[in-house]
Amino acid sequence: MDLVVRDGQMPVMDGNEATVLLRSMGVTIPILAVTGNALMEDRARFMKSGVNTVICKPVGKARLQAAIAEFCPAAAV
Image (tube, rainbow, N blue to C red):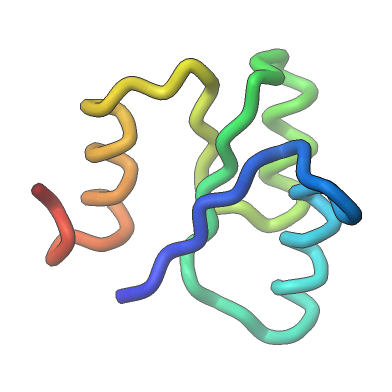
């Protein structure tokens, strides 16, 4: 299974804009947002854009592995 891991701040287009665009194009694969913005309103904005989950920075190995396993069980390591 495929999985998109995207940052909140990216050049040219921010992560929310990219997520909205992907979803509008019919992309249904899971999208994980990685961000330094940990406020609840930030998380709500990310979820509204169409991500499946939000992981706050700094990202620990165990947290990232758990998120990947949740959406791609066959990829769990």
